[in-house]
Image: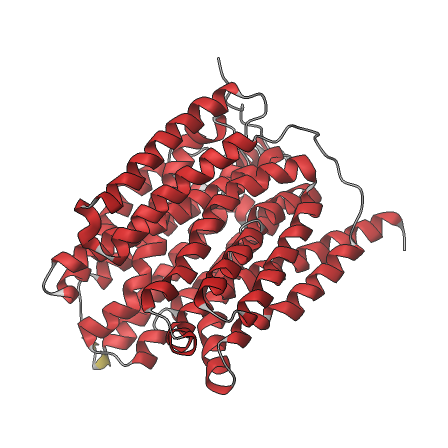
Length: 480
């Protein structure tokens, strides 16, 4: 086998290892919710403390995402990805062995420290190893997360029924070890940029994000805290720390998060898009199973399965769109996707219990399943295009850009969840409240998010028009 053949097989082997890592991470993000009653009972704790196993995981991974991409550029992408898998695997083992809720929360933090780096680091490595087909390979990542949404709850239910909640975490250990063995075989010297690490910026940024998300999580758990210092003090602290961080990052020689990737067009447009996308899509759809119960009286089995059509259709669509992304361009799939997601939310908000057409009767479950399939079609169209549109702006910063994208989407998701819970606490009829929320989300997507799509550069379309195979560089924003 020649050197070029070995290099070619090595990069596909890494893609498989990265895909397995992302699938493991995606499954773990959804499977824990199934185990909440069992964990509460087995550890003799309260629901509030068990909820922190989810909250801490979300908070830490949100902070890690933008930081991991930046650190990968300094220490080596593959080296840091290896360390991320080690942390996630060790964290999973500690979760399975945790004797009390406090150590379980701490172990979940270790898990998130590793898992938060999976997406930005794998995207950066794939961008480097597949320069000629980066759009397709990155797009295929978009089909992995829906699979985790399908496998996670179902696998968790089977494990809980036949074994215990601890095996939900311990099953990650052999998978993690296998990935580490594969990565060790791929080990080779990497290009590195010796830089000073912006420790002060990292601590300030982490403190700001943690304070903000902690406040939003608190008001999401108890909406009455919105008038309490418990909510406003961390919000104020987050604002102060973000201001300090922004000034610091403009002054330091090697900033942790490049301000140009946050606040300068077209990156500003992309970041606002991801924040709104996370709020409207990641948070609101998570309430559909609850809506199925309070609106239609569905059983736990039916409500648990109602999101499966969305995940299945999204996975298939994202895979197909990724293969033809350069032909389609970025703007068309994004616009169609956002439009379909908006339409699906609008239809969900109608609350129709049945529809008859030419003697064919479709009940509440079938209607809601079709609406979720429509949403999955929209997400499958939009996700690969949106992911690649921003990477084309500055491919050499793929890790940092992917980390920021994940941070904004995650923050939007937590913010949206807090808003939904607050509204539901204020309305007497929760079914009516959710109908209004879904309708409002549809209007928000159509009125605010869809126009942003046309402000994001479509470099794939430009390349197709110019008849060139290589990316058309967009001038990077710089300080005057």
